[in-house]
Image (cartoon, rainbow, N blue to C red; front, side):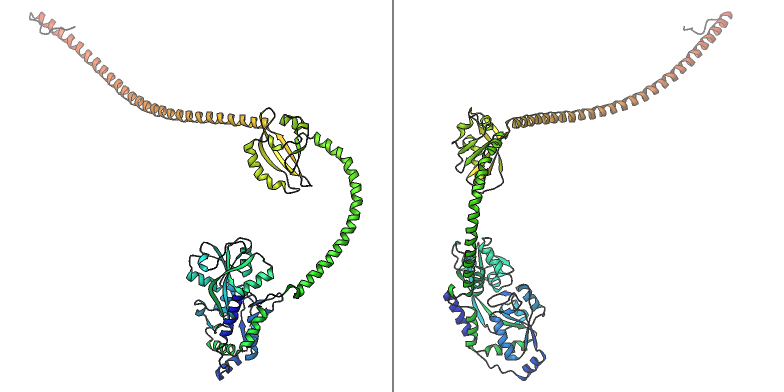
Length: 521
């Protein structure tokens, strides 16, 4: 840790060696005369570099640098307070602010901002939980859930050089530290002094710096790109600040040695407060004990009188009830237990109630109830189990466990549901039978439907044939009528011809001649 902080100071000192003449040109002085107020947008949560305190006052290393520059140039810096770093960058892109007091140089930001030489240089470190496997380099971050504040330079570094690392952006550094501390995420990449500040301030004791990223955040003063003259003025002024002044500011906010807890004013305030409250507590406890002794005597008498009442209620309940100790041994059993277990109540005392639970059900039940037995006053948990009575018969029961106030005893209740389960089984079997009958009836209905459809089709075909037959029959009858009429006409004609032939034959005979026609009758 000391090595990392030493590196910080070395980089910071080197950044101030190349001082330039801060004397401004006439053009620069004229420009400043027209721009007496410059809008700056600090990172709202970047202590000890910069942040806004609970009163909204701009604080930190960068704030003191801005104060030096303000006095040197005779101008005023107007602090624009943003909600987070993403909003700071957006306002810089939109020209709603003119300067960022402490920001890293990235290719993306170079599109809309100019950079001064770095005036603060800090390493990026890997932060993990104390019990998390050590991660010393960025190569070991693969496969881990890595938290980075959204918009911070570490996100750009890893995205470019290690695109396969799973980065989870968060709004603030404190959010990320809490996620790692609680095990929601694995590691966090952050700027060393900022991470140490939050860890100490928030008292997050289970975090540690496990390694270095190999990257450094070089913080510069960023000025809007369309005002290049402002960048030149800033660089001259910043370079003109003596190195000892810069180091004095940094040492004020970042100390290499941890202060003794006894030199901490807050420690003594807390210690004195604890002593005062302890004294008051001792007096209260002393008075409470005197009152308690009196109440114990009174309550003992009431307890003795209520013991018999409790036992009568315990025996009168219609549920098989056991009182067991923390080792599951039976202390007391009521009469109803005899019917469920098949044992005399007095014989149950000293036995483990788990002996009566079917083994397969016991394993499942104990896994769920073990934690609850340690919770005094917990709500009873119900389990459906199979019990084995003295005759070896299996009974179905609803079993519940309720922890008593002393947390060393429990009440185990057993409701026999064997008959109900049998009834449910019969209902299920009946339901299955009805379902099968229904399915059979449904199949028969479908078959009957098919047969009816065939019959309807056949009926329609027969009707069509009958209609055609009737038509043919009618035509036949009409033809027979015609033939009969024709026959009648023909017969009458033949009769008349025969009559005529007879007359001719008779006349020929009278004339002495032979008959000409042969008469057919």
